[in-house]
Length: 305
Image (cartoon, rainbow, N blue to C red; front, top):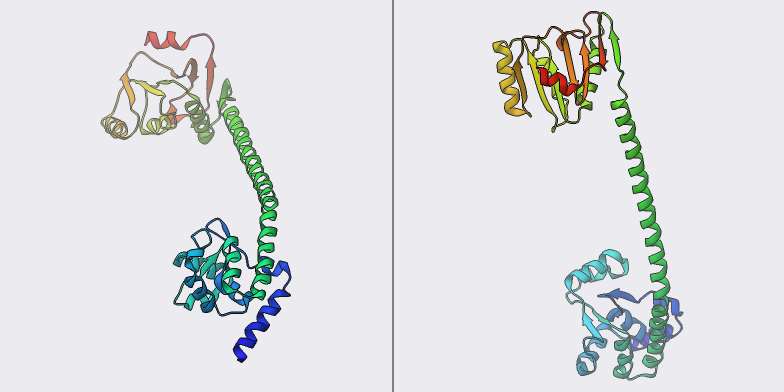
């Protein structure tokens, strides 16, 4: 008796609940707006078991578009995102979800004036939520568009910064002096200039130097992969031959030819010819200079070798 009285009081209290409170009980599952059996049972003032038994006795009135049972994964997700469903974790049965049509049908199944009145309030809540959805979707789409455009702007900003950095790198690479004097001991400065010249090559590097060692191979490693490298030298020691063999087995090969008719050192970078005042391996040890020559064409010099 007390139990029935308590349930009646719950139902009367439910009739006085504001619409916003009922709206908070409406969930979105499988893309549908639904309410769970336990929430409906509380609003109707009956036990969840009693509500579900009434549905089962009239199951022909509840097609799948009116009611469906949650899966294990759906129940776990509910427990995770909403604290009021924590008891589901220990429940032996999965809850049922009722659509708006299912809620309407419940009123006729439960057969009470209170059930009818509460069903009207619940349907009103469904309608309110349904009307609000387009506004929510528009707001969501606007936020999504703003975030998308912000992302685009960030990407464009990053791309612009990268392009600017690339421009400066390119300018610094090709802003090379036509001539440079190195004084006694400026080994590193000389090495930097030779590295910049090698890195600036786009198609070919030709070095004419009577005295080469493994440091020349290391220097030429700085060139781009598609740039051909050729060395003309007066002689090759056994050690250098071994170094060249190991180098060519691992890296883009360097062609080394014996040439005994050169006195000075020359470096050809694409179509430019540089006069080098000392062997590359000794550049900067003593006073010397590197100069861009305008009196001879690169192809002409290579043809005469």
